[in-house]
Amino acid sequence: MSRDDALSDDDLISILKAEEADATSYYTSELASDQAFAMDRYYAAPYGDEVAGRSKITTHDIEDTINWMMPPLMRLFFGADELVSCEPENESDEPNCMPAASYLQHILLKDNPGTQLIYDFCFDGLLQRIGFLSIMWEDPKPHMPKIFEGMGVEQLMKLHADPEWKILEVSKANQDYAAVEQEADNEAQEPPEPQEGQEPAEPAAQAAPAGAAPVAQSPPSPLMPTFTIKAQRTPKVGRVRIMGVAPEEIAISRRAASIETAPYIRRRQERYLADVIRENPKKKAELEASGASSQREDVADTDPRVLSRFAKESISIGNEASSGQGRTKVDYFWEWLWVDFDGDGDVELRRIERV
Image 1 (cartoon, rainbow, N blue to C red):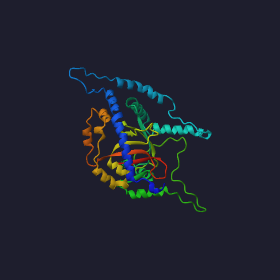
Image 2 (cartoon, one colour):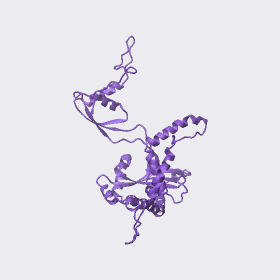
Image 3 (spheres, rainbow, N blue to C red):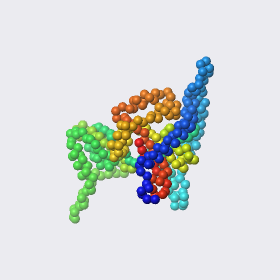
Image 4 (tube, rainbow, N blue to C red):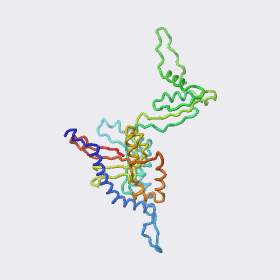
């Protein structure tokens, strides 16, 4: 097959929409109603067929049973010293297994809320018959800008020299920021090599001797220059992000025997259009046009699982409050599809993101 046989974007979207409709119809017609019924029984909600003058008693038996099962189930995961272990495939892998397991456990429990994630995963499995966790690599993203008030010259110089931080705004006090920035650049340069017959320059500050008591640093004097800084941090590397996924966000092809072999999987999430544009600046014009003209169907108003989970809350009021200026929402899809997209004759698993 040649490159001419590759799928166009329109053809790919047609396939995705057909697969998504098939998977959604299965989840909304068969599994979703059972999951909503289980959620109603967990909250001891009325059955809806009550007759005046007859008993309207509902019990919390399902809630009590699940809450009784969760502690021993969590102890299965966290009762052992090592939650994560790695098995070597050959002798050369054995020395690396323990460090790798420690690193993976750090990702799960320190870099992500692993305890809460496993609890939610088990809870959904007991109540909803199936639970999902999303594990994805997240590229470095700029954090929200922070404002630092009363920052001294030394602190400002350190922040300027840190490659992860970008100074956006500086309010001038009794010293020009340009002079501080120039001083930080000068200190970052290495001292010049001494000429022949010349003694090397002594360092400006000597390290404290071993065992010496630390010297307490007093706050900057009111006479010293201070600044108000607005800065933004962008990490050097990305991270592994683990998230719990609500059952209504997931749809799997009805022909799937397992999630590993499913020909199609999709995750549908409600996101602010402004966030999507920030992550995809090259698509800004197209995204703004689609956001202005789209008539999205709110899952919260139609999915029985959402209605059961938030039965005591007014979902429609929340939707109206979130539809103000600058808060336009779109349906964001992560889709996994087995398809020969490039026309090379091999069917491959592709991950597509679309709005």
